[in-house]
Image (cartoon, rainbow, N blue to C red; front, side, top):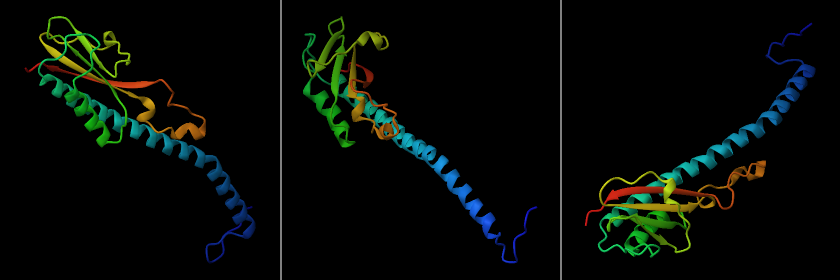
Length: 176
């Protein structure tokens, strides 16, 4: 039989202690799940915000490349400094320290790939087909660890793996 509360709305002490124990147990069970969800929201929010910044850096680099005269026709040559500086300026303004840049163009009729730094590995066949006409394509490649904090590592979830990269490309019509 259930006892009724007194005139002040308090339950008898035995029932109050039992209810407090239930609340603490619920808190212990639910709080870790809420914490994991919060850390995941922060981690992926930061990652998606940084992906937008890389996309913008690729766009800025593409615009700079489309306005750069005398692009090299030798495959593997370094990317022009105007393009590298434009991309790095955008990335450092948002706190992304490192990036590799590849520039593909077809000013001489066949695609030429310029890279900075020289040892960067880029597979342009995985990227969509270029548009017709004279174009420049800038690809910005950033290690995933520079974009996403590894907050879920404390929970045993390693989503930031070494060697993983995030890359964005942007294509512009050559304007020179």
